[in-house]
Image (cartoon, rainbow, N blue to C red; front, top):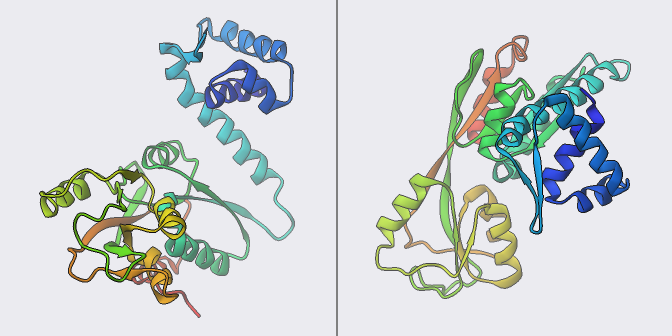
Length: 283
């Protein structure tokens, strides 16, 4: 199977169009069409149909997408590991939910970088479904996630939960009925608890699926939102954000997941877990 054809297929899926895929790959549309046909001929299945609204995956295309991502990911990982510079013996792939990178993901990266000087590091941002898939296929060695799904030869460490606190750009912001309130979707548990605590409140005009994006929105446009303390406290220390003290505080579980084979020589792993749980870096 041709890796170039696989990458072309993934570019079509990502852009939703053969025309946009050709621009992304810097080739002609006829080349994209030929590569797709080669792949479909190899598989004996139509993977993508072309419509006025763009390129759409067929049922076999949806099934093949997962394997295309795995094959191209494994190839990239193999290429990295076989071309490591002198003095570097192995590659560690870190997966991290985007909202866990500020503070916590950076701490994980720094601690591995400090303790494994013979290791090259690669960090992959991903949503929960992507992290689960990467772990299931061995594409990542360790990850920070909110809702881990256990796979064989893996260990899950429960870290200190994220405290979700109501922050505002105004010291006198109301706890309820703030017209600039931004709802951040932290998952099903948060939605249920939030609905119970604010049963009399209306639907927020603005919602985000990422706390990082919500924080950027607050700092640029003003308003209030629930944020993890590790995200909100730097802004509060600078006088840019204020805590609404009378508002309820929620929690979101955080986990470190490790591939047991990848970390079997990490004698310092227990102390790493403790520092991650307490958000403390080794000095």
